[in-house]
Amino acid sequence: MESTLELTKIKEVLQKNLKILIILPLLFLIISAIVTFFVLSPKYQANTQILVNQTKGDNPQFMEQEVQSNIQLVNTYKEIVKSPRILDEVSKDLNDKYSPSKLSSMLTITNQENTQLINIQVKSGHKEDSEKIANSFAKVTSKQIPKIMSVDNVSILSKADGTAVKVAPKTVVNLIGAFFLGLVVALIYIFFKVIFDKRIKDEEDVEKELGLPVLGSIQKFN
Image (tube, rainbow, N blue to C red; front, top):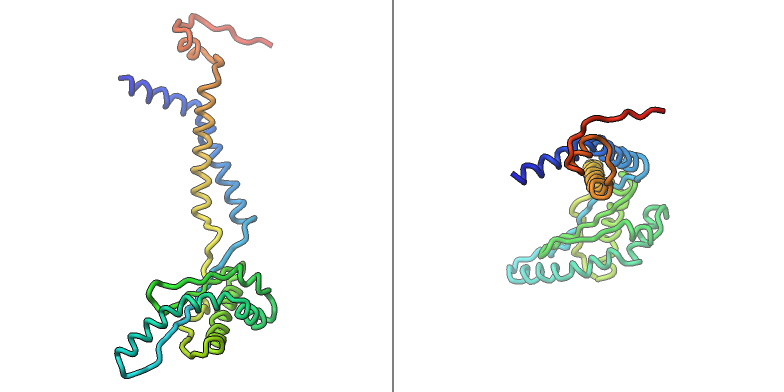
């Protein structure tokens, strides 16, 4: 019985503050849409892959050992890709459009565990640029590592041509998140309003606060 009464009270409070429950989420949604579409700059990510591969041989045991050796070299190669030497060469390859420090901030190097693959990820505000930069890193790396390490076991597995995708801003996530944030703010506002606002506004409040029936009301005259 008490739980039913509590639910009834909650329902009444929400109905009284229905405008706030509608206006605040919509306001947050509109602000988020403006920021997402007109303020935030889009970011595109392009990916390329290079392969640390083994030389051809007839001895299975030797080939297995070389595969393991190449896997161990992957971490070294990852650091080389991010090194100043590679960054300088990529900057030159792109006609100095981006400085080495700028290229470094756009670059992410990852690899799948126990594989010979190195993933080169580049984020840029322009789709075509992210693809060009990623391809340049793959090309320069495949040329420079043999010179640095005195080996010839690196090749480009995949290029970024036409594969860049938009990764930010996340429009749907931003809009849904803003709507629910507005809803939470509205509920918090209503909660504090109910707790701290003790003013009597109508006959119903008089009956609740004093426990007395209302016999009549006097209209306000100007």
